[in-house]
Image (tube, rainbow, N blue to C red; front, top):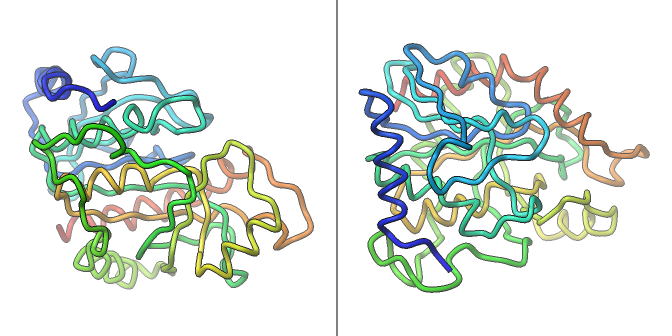
Amino acid sequence: MPAATTTFQETADFIASKTALKPEVGIILGSGLGALGDSLQDACAIPYGEIPHFVVSTAPGHKGRVIIGSCGGKTLLCMQGRFHYYEGYTMQQITYPVRVMKLLGIQTLILTNSCGGLNPGFDSGDLMVITDHINFMGQNPLIGANEDQFGPRFPDMTYTYSRELIAMAKQAAADNDIRLREGVYVACSGPSFETPAEIRMFQQMGGSAVGMSTVPEAIIARHCGMRLLALSCVTNPAAGIVDAPLTGEEVIETAGRAAETFIRLLTGIIQRL
């Protein structure tokens, strides 16, 4: 069941008490993409284990802390690492931080992830802006009693990913000479990678990339009425596209190599907000 509204407020009050900065933009940094948080100025870092009602991140490549600081003329709240359904947490636990951000006054959320490429034309290290998603996780974080303070019982998902922010991302990419793909993200529960047969099905469904995150947070952000942008780092071709096994180490390694480009793109976007 969703947490009581007073619980969300307790967490928000705790985070607000740690810094005088007032975050305007929230960013959730995915596997191997936490470097942006390390680059923030005048930053305050809070380990997840110290934050009331937060769980801890157990996935490799996730530092597990909130960092509040400045970048591109904006004050950001960055989560260095997210929570995943495959870690054994509930959908309500992994999306809890999004509602806390809303109570902190954040109206714009940027989600990032590392993913497998479904489009054979994508290369490892490519960046992709998400234009839509397919929820193949078998769960939805809004199941249960509705949190009326945040949004309606039946939120419309047609405009989940802000067209305005997508346009900003494309312009930031063009100005920084970064190739930015775009497409549909397919979310699976994990932690096993998908089979070649599943990948062929996702391709026929119109998917461009596949991963194990992002969609639950996107649903809650939409429910809360937040402006949302989501960016993927394509770390490998999905199963069966090339004749090679997939490993988690490859995901983190490729994301790390793409980190500098990713930070340039994010900084360019933030400057335009």
